[in-house]
Amino acid sequence: MILFEFEHENATSAEEAVTRLHEIETETRFLAGGTDLIPNMRIGIAKPAHLVGLGRILREPMTVDGEGWLKVDALTRLAEIEHSDLVTSAAPLLAASAHTVAGNQIRQRATLGGNLCQETRCLYLNQKHDFQFVEPCYKRGGDCCYPFPKNKKEVCWSVYMSDIAPALMAAGAEVTVLGAGGPVRMSIDHLFSGDGLRPLTLNLGEMIRYVHVPPMGKDSAWGYHKSTVRGGLEFGMAVMALTFRLDADRESCKDARIAIGAVNEGPVRLSKTEAAMQGQRLNKKSLTELAEMASAEVNPLPHHGFSKPHLRDNIRVYLRRAMEAALARAQQA
Amino acid sequence: MLDSPEKTTSSVLRARPKPRLVTLSINGEPHEVVVRPHIMLLEVIRDHVGLTGTKDGCESGTCGACTVLLDGKPVLACITLAVECDGMNVQTIEGLSEGGQLSDLQEAFLDQAATQCGFCTPGVIMSSKALLDSNPKPTVPEIKKALEGNLCRCTGYNSIVDAILQYSGQGVKPLMRKDGAP
Ligand SMILES: Cc1cc2nc3c(=O)[nH]c(=O)nc-3n(C[C@H](O)[C@H](O)[C@H](O)COP(=O)(O)OP(=O)(O)OC[C@H]3O[C@@H](n4cnc5c(N)ncnc54)[C@H](O)[C@@H]3O)c2cc1C
Ligand code: SF4
Ligand code: FES
Ligand code: FES
View 1 (cartoon, rainbow over the protein chains, first blue to last red):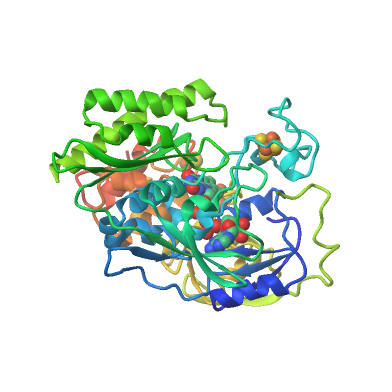
View 2 (view 1 turned 90 degrees about the horizontal axis):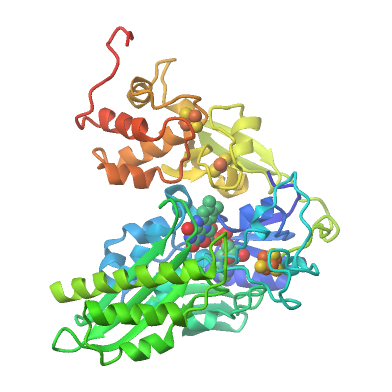
């Protein structure tokens, strides 16, 4: 039950939805699958006065163009993405990451765009229940961060939990953002501000319209791991995604991309480790060293009861395993 | 930024949102309900239509007790706005039995003691039905994946997996004799 009232209308096209967001004078939000926004409205941490539903907009089918780029309508439901043969072959990282989000019922409604635009989370912020008195923190206009009271003013350590964003980052994906001025295509890396208070760089009324994933060449490898406690219907403890290309010797690394999610205000690239990987012969020993380097490079925020050292350890072990799996898959192919 | 506790929408909305007509087919029967936008599909099913088989557990998308099939897909009625479902088909647990006779899937759950307090059961069975509709002989990992969004605090889950294996004819024998005696 949501304890306040709001207006709702359905848009029939993406352009109309964007126009309506600029026309409506009260605070308005897009409603895609609602699996992030509605729970936040229910606990009263989001109180838009108006929702523009995107569910009735005709979704464009996913396509792969002549150069091998996969184009996905951002309104596509995650269940469709995880089970799509096209996505599994053209962008295996996207399929693997969509498969790990929440539970089946949520994936049936949740959309790709909504997943990327989800709010950041923190145990204090998201614990609110009707019966609890919870003083607002910085993220809600208050004057303290209660779990981290030593934080400087306006420093919020809420964590961005998308399982898909790091996968798309490691794949080198791009997004088309539709705003009042028309569509703009950019690297997905530019979507994230790194600020827990306003984690996305999107302005009001800007919509993620498409996600574009570049082709995986024959020389490419990919790895993905989402660490959780119980292994189902759970936000990540840490999410690891990587791609690399192998030289003709099938052992030396041409270049690599590593993205870590669920431990910071946005997904982060590990550029130092990526640079160290370049030109390296990849084997058990070097991957162990690289994973150690990555675990030192990443700077996880303590979140949901997991300490920084614990998260570092987790990333060291599971990133190594994800890299080993990636290498084995590429060498077998 | 998120919103402070003090913020209200009533001060910015010029008028109370008008109720609107939502047409649903619930278990094959047409229903028309008049709701304001903040009303959930779960409230419509339980409070407006009076089908209380679908349970209200966490109301935050985490337990799966409210699972119903919306146009054949399992969704959480507690986080789905009723206005978003206009014109759609809803199937609830009540739609599985016919003339007071439980469906074979429900019987398999009873037989394997896959239901104890029963609070999770309607949601679990709707998720299972969605799985079996698209995959008549699911493997154990497929069953676990399909049910990851359904929490049960009583059974320990193994009996639920067994009930689905029994129903789909995959080597799990019935526990009860035909006359119902254990
Ligand atoms: C129990 C539970 C478990 C969950 N577990 C996970 C998990 O493991 N991993 C995970 O990543 N997420 C998880 N989620 C969060 C959420 O379900 C997903 O992130 C989902 O993909 C959100 O998509 P949606 O379409 O439902 O978004 P919505 O809730 O509709 O929207 C989320 C936000 O994005 C905005 N928005 C939506 N679409 C667009 C668009 N195209 N362009 C711009 N803005 C847009 C909305 O205005 C809103 O502010 C979980 C949620 C619940 C309730
Ligand atoms: S980390 Fe951010 S969301 Fe959490 S209590 Fe502090 S300010 Fe609020
Ligand atoms: S009541 Fe809907 S998921 Fe718990
Ligand atoms: S039977 Fe009691 S919660 Fe599942």
